[in-house]
Length: 394
Image 1 (cartoon, one colour):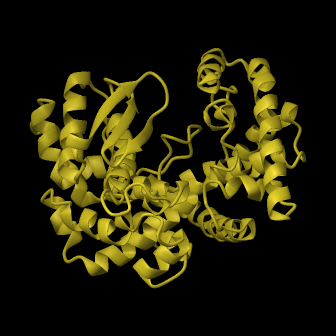
Image 2 (cartoon, one colour):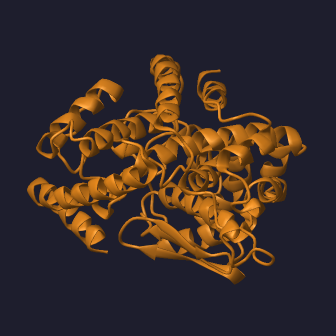
């Protein structure tokens, strides 16, 4: 893809002028796409026409209401959590030497344990952004080249892409295989499966009780307190405003999405001039997280999405996070002893429930009807708020 190459180059050089020239083209193309979709639908809502590509049947007004509820609650909760964690011991640093080969072995073994079928897929590395794609019979997971000083980065990426991959592998393979109904429910639901694994299960204390002894053996760190389950859990649930969305903690992640949602909407609706994007980005980071990027590499150049034309994609991350929290709340009631089973490395109950209630449905239902059928309720941000309050503020 041309956009991926351009993004790699401008990010490496911090080249905003070069980025601006290319982004002007992708914005113009997306406006043309939105205009065509609006003509077909009879609506005059350009940005909603783009978000509908990733979260079908989701009015922009609903997204704005959900995000407003989350912003109000999480803005008030963030200083409480930061103050609470400031009184707790700092987690021990994870940085050490973790050989790339050992990390990839770990990632492969973990995916196999969770339920990814390597007879129908594979795990690979790339020098650029992670991605998942393929079919139920050939599902490719690609994570960024491992960082040999911090294994948790590739672990996080593996869980995220693995959630995507297990969803793809769980889609109907026989009766509906070559019909539209066998397709997935779109980006928002796909992100829900990835974030359920990465954010919710991948940050549970029981997950690290399972993982810790295996890490100690693999990385020759027997009795290394940094690799203890308690320290790993505190490390992965430490809340700290940061510049990078992909490595953000679970609580501040929403604010990264909110900023991008606001800015791309303004760019498409032409209420923000492209030349003013870096300044608007930095002002938004100040407002939402109280930090100021030192350069555009820390700011508006960091994501590949706009360079490959994916305007309207970002809200799907938070919609997916909300869906994930709501699904997990129901799953924990439906499947006995989920935390204890995860502690023992048994993911079958989780994957089985998701398979029956989400994956195997294909596109038989809309994503909203699927969620109502699975949980008994329409999408409600209260589930994500309750999850974050319980994990971080209690």
